[in-house]
Length: 491
Image (tube, rainbow, N blue to C red; front, side, top):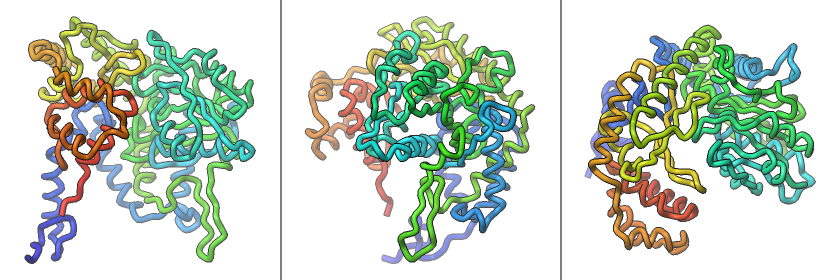
């Protein structure tokens, strides 16, 4: 049978450009809305007219420029250095500061920045056969990914269930002779609270260990909030002992994905981040980041975004976001049975339910049905399940609508009642080991939850309830298998 021109990603005959774009728009129609202030995760929308068009045009100008060789494309080098300088100046580094020699690199996102921070710390200590990193359990999961990829041991530090922060004494106690890096978050993604960075950096410095501040999420917002009068504690290079900081520009700098900056206090600290190789007959390879070939598109788009918005633009956006956070927090307080898990300190509203009749996972589904897309977080180590709202400037015009929608969703969730899974399924989830999962068992579990090849259920409460009932390692395996079901080729 001959394939038609419009079938599959690689048709026999090419498809006209207009039709291809129509197909992509049709596929996009099923996505969560990236603009309009109703999606509280994954995307960052400033609600600034014309900014998308500017970023897209800048992206197109440099999409085919290759960051592999900065000597071949000096335009990209200039823009990358400009982004690093802007981030360094915002975060307490540069001329006239206590960290005048800050250097950095542009990466594809926060995960790559964190992996490279761990790599630099590990490779700076070649004398250690089994290097280790100390990370609060509230630290981003990308640190665990870095530890896994780089074969570095991860020493987790618990957080106080009331403050959601690690105790400095616990961090100090976790540092061993093999520790190469200590981590603090500013703020943590899950709850939006700042770790005691100055105190953590001090105990790391006393032990002669690097301290990385993961400010991927808040690094571009906290300085502006401080200028607006918020009591933001020291967290950047003004803090002695902070040796590196990561900040994502595709978050609150509102650049298109994916652009992050990894900063080091001085060039010597950054040097082990590089990879160079000359023992082959091809070009001599030297990479500051994980990728070799890098499109200049995201870097140019980020450069255009920063240039266009400027300091005054970011200050205005931070003020609007601050007010939106306050309004959303008030909306949560107004609903019986809900409470803030933490008082907002940055751009996150995180809440939980104290009423057993109010199932948070059902509440999330009810909000989704009303056009509000939030992020559920499973219970962990004494911390309750919660709902995470990443708040951007575009949310501000929607705040007045969210309160009634949240109240309606809570009423509907109570009426529906908590998700009730069959007792045998719950017993299975509590007793199975990851190794005991067979393909038939996985297929049966997925089918019972409405998961199939390439398709997820409209409501996710049952899936989240099962995942929450499973121990952590089984939860991880189930997630791998369930996502694997979704990611199947189309022929």
